[in-house]
Image (cartoon, rainbow over all chains, first blue to last red; front, side, top):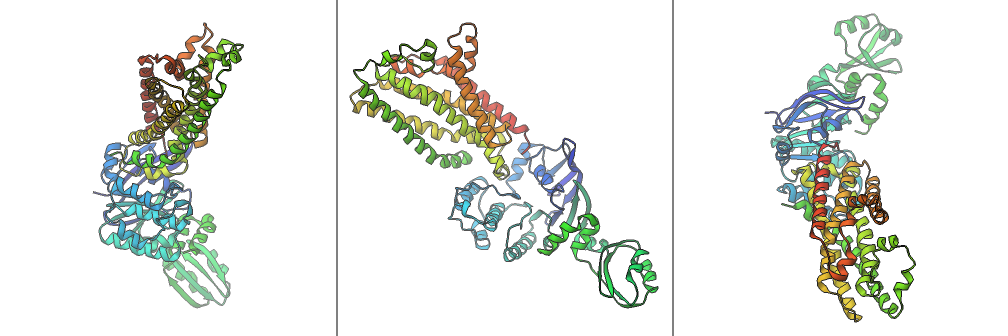
Length: 304
Length: 261
């Protein structure tokens, strides 16, 4: 049985469709990345999975529990960890008090172990916490009861690169122990490092559902070519070219078309040097999203 | 069991203590003031007031300590002050958590929404009980200290029967809390409703034609001054208040269930 099974899940706010018939399933023991820019509808899906929002149409099951069935979902929540995008811990409480409360609600089998990995100053009140400390406290509460499924909304935002790396290692280790992880992100490098499969959501619609390998294969190739003549003419006759970046004597682009067409076109030019390789996932993303969103997405790629 | 109630109650202890100290200080001042006024014909001061106002302020037998406390403390602090306070605090319970996005975490717990709101409501018994026990005791001891005697049974009844009234104020706050989008609006709405109900009862109480309106006000079912003076009360009144509270709590649970977070 799939830990998460989403069927035609739709959420409408008036005329706005935050989720439009989203369908996918997460397999046991995998790390599933839910990828999309801010406002794509990632959090809406997650909030419906946890019963915070009622779907307009469609349904989903989480650890076998129908999200429309409150008591079944409550039972399932004993085995679910959740890290929301915004952590609203009470500012006056200490981290210790918060964890104590969480422990009384769901258990704390792994608390000590987690406190060794993530190190927020738990004896201090939360209002003194940095964003990173808050996030670490959030991660601890999500995993402390040794859940079977962990759902995380933008888990590494606010963590410094070192802690991010520790987090990635931690997630991989958890997956190897058999835990299923569902995480949303708009940071591609994060997803590439830890996820086995990826669903890409845009404008409330799931536009692609692939494992990382396929995603890279279908995302086209990065072509870097140096010629002695005009490269502009080269590209104008070719279909399936995106993300063109000219450099002196040459051009780099993502090519999603057919190889033969590329080779025929190249043969008409005086090619001095050519390199065809795997594109970074950031560029794959651009392929799915189109050029208009590249400004914001290339920004997120750089902080990887 | 009751983990949320226990946690929330723990967070309310400090506020309850501060509230009790503040009300105790005010009560101490009023008792001292009564001793200063002894020999002065206080009732003469009020005799020119229209009967509706006397009724509104719960003025009755001001020359006795019971009448004086009834008007100065119970009618003002318990009916109005604490009524508004508990409506305000209850107004913030759910709305604050939704606004600060803390509700996301709370609802990821294996607990139903109905239970969450019920346990949060239960935690309000901490200030309810603490302020009644502390201030009641302080008033009794201080009155004895200055040589005045209050019937302890009457005093106990005034405090005990204030609980159903204050619970209705809590219920009004809870309903506002699950309906409003922002905490500040929920709190203001709750305070506004309780205040208007207090005024309505005071104003229409004297007008025969519209006196049925007063039955909608919870203040109609809890009258501390006569209770303190001669221990008269109607259990049916407290029953009406308790049923109203349960109704409001159920309403808030239903509304909370249907709401998107």
